[in-house]
Length: 569
Image 1 (cartoon, rainbow, N blue to C red):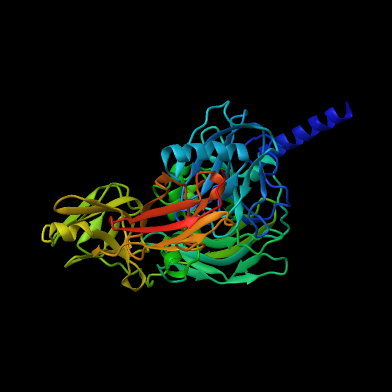
Image 2 (tube, rainbow, N blue to C red; image 1 turned 135 degrees about the vertical axis):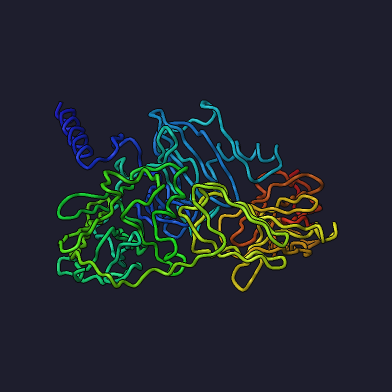
């Protein structure tokens, strides 16, 4: 009876606590930790990443692979996705309460799940695969072994990517569910900026973005020198959090602002949808990020930004500063554990008739964000769909020879833009080896997936820069790693080869032994293909190995060798 009463009290406490801080009401103590080690994070929910918010927790695995990954709650495996990039090997578990948990960058799976996957990979003769098991096929219990941690896909080191998604497949902050991570340190503040937001506004006698000097206080908070401003202005802050046990610079949980004690802005990382995640590029000062590699979060809402992360925003979070009036603007940055940093900014309204104006470069190519736009010259064209840009923009465009100078990469693109090239002057043989490339560092051509028609090539792009026609006539390289032609390799557990392509990149590969398909796992970070002899496909003593690797243009290379193994029969 006592335990029941305490549970009721605990529930009521959580209910009212969650209500007060406006967090979603979610089940507590339903999900368990997915690893049998103390949880230390390298990445937090909502963390600002390239073109997206981080959708889960990145849990450190002590710089190792192969740790047991456990089901966070009862349920069944509803989805399995194996790909070269992204989450690599990933497992999705559907739970009876409507939530889904996701486990990414896995090394491999528990024996039952591994056998289920391998059977279908061999049937389809492919490594990359996506499966949707029926509800009764792969049931799991809480804390049951489901996989082993790894470093597959777009992972920068061994860790487990862990998500909790709601019934609409929107990722939610796992910490809301009672998964505790030690954090005794308040967020760090790197820099602060003030933004005049229209032609009539100015800060410290300038219409340009202004960096504001932070003055540290003894209590760990900050103040600034008094700012002189007039008109509509906003602020932006570069801030990160550091949790206990790791030096990683993680995302913060909440930012609130107020002016003269009145709340005007709240950014809260509780939940978002994947359809809105690219609007991160409008939340941050994208131009500053590209040029300085620091993400400044704007504490105001620009037109057309639909992010659901905003809460209780007044006047779009902007300040209307009037001449001869004083204002106190506060920024409160909070991590999930409740540790805070406060920045107090005194503002004096002072009109200036002699301000330093913003530099406005006008060109012949003005694009309204809410209208489509196209242009063509010298056999090169582009089409910008409606709402591909976040703001009305003058584009810096040059059509020259076979190269399109297409504005600057510090302007973000939201929807795909199409660039096209007339290739009628090239022979059919030449066109087979050509593709559209973006010129990267040192003018290296970076492959863009190219749609080829007889006389016109097109590509979908999401980054401004220089685009040109490039050619790739060199086939991929293939080199054996742990065997040689004619060698006995009975003691090998695996068969490994390295593959690489310097220009258009690897598109596909196929390997056979004695004419029979063998599964080879591609790890693009070290250009290695690996076959596991435990698959039981290679059973003969003398084995003829053949692999064909093809790049994105269609150049192919073939490697053949004979190896010997002690027969299983």
